[in-house]
Length: 348
Ligand code: IPM
Ligand code: MN
Image 1: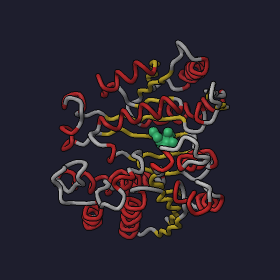
Image 2 (image 1 turned 120 degrees about the vertical axis):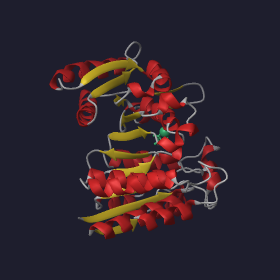
Image 3 (image 1 turned 135 degrees about the horizontal axis):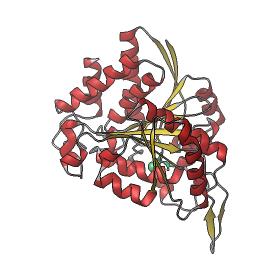
């Protein structure tokens, strides 16, 4: 293949981990005889500093012209602590999702055997847990009508049938390729939007007779995820619930630094770690590059390059088995971002 990749390193530790996503992609392409080229574009706080816009039109153009986007992270404490800020780095991420039509966010929660003791849950609960959360990404409260004054504020959680159907289709298809168990997570006992989700899901379920579909309220799902994570195979939910549940899901594996994600939809797909920009770690060579590297594995797999993806997963697992890890996984480790990255390349 001939890959044209847009690289959006963003803020904080973003550029440090983007480097290893790019290096791993180069090494794998070389090994398998693919061509690859990278075009860099600003997003988040760095883009605000440069031009006042966290997702400038030139960055959109670079994304639209690419086969895939490798995204790292956005966010800067300067804006977090200023509720009056007119523009925020996170708006860059939201604008990218909306403008590329990325309605489906796929967040796998996998566990690594050698890290089981890092999980806050008991080993026997986590060992073998393996599920995927499909989060709706361009609707709901994130994008619904908003109002904000000193006395009153609201966000609207609006969903159309079309928006619900297309994300459910992604989820049913995913379940088909896995263990054929789909859990639709909602709050249909309280929310009108959730009742529409449930109704549409119940209408679609008979088209997927090979998939066992069940329905769970989000509060119950949050509990079940820590009581019995192995219950889940594929879960699908709306934007805000998905945001919260996937952070919960990420700690099950022992470190947020390990989980990649894919966002797909109408235009160029985006592959990114689920962790944030960790500004305190910027420039210290301590950020864990693995979630970014695993997002490159997801990228290859998306394009049908299963062997390439498998190779990346194998070297990542090997690095963990051999203790070649950043300090988030082992405080005594002498390996930093660069050393882990270089080790992975040497194994590829
Ligand atoms: C995520 C992040 C974003 C979200 C923020 C940075 C806007 O938390 O990707 O989960 O809330 O969607
Ligand atoms: Mn989040």
